[in-house]
Image (tube, rainbow, N blue to C red; front, side, top):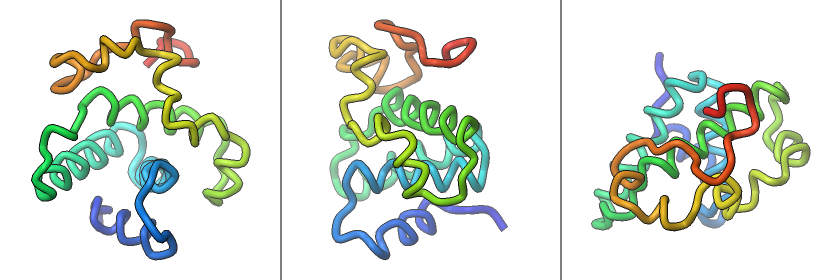
Length: 133
């Protein structure tokens, strides 16, 4: 049985009063753990896109931001294989900073149409692993 975005969303929101950045990180961490990096990119991206469309705000979906967060979280999961989310974020606190992508991307790049609609490589600094992404 495959994991769905709705299942992950329900699991994360069960104990959270709201769905903020920490919950986004938690959902992505679960997706990476259960599906692997590549499948998590598709699962999270499609789920966020669908949710934004359903909420009447399809413009809120951002392809590069969605994938970049999965890439960053997957990198840290590979480095820290704990099965406990709280322990994971305790060891990887920069992931809780929603401005983290500004280390890798210029704001003008993320504001561009190509970044909103497809994958754009970091243009400020490469991601912190060999190959950069």
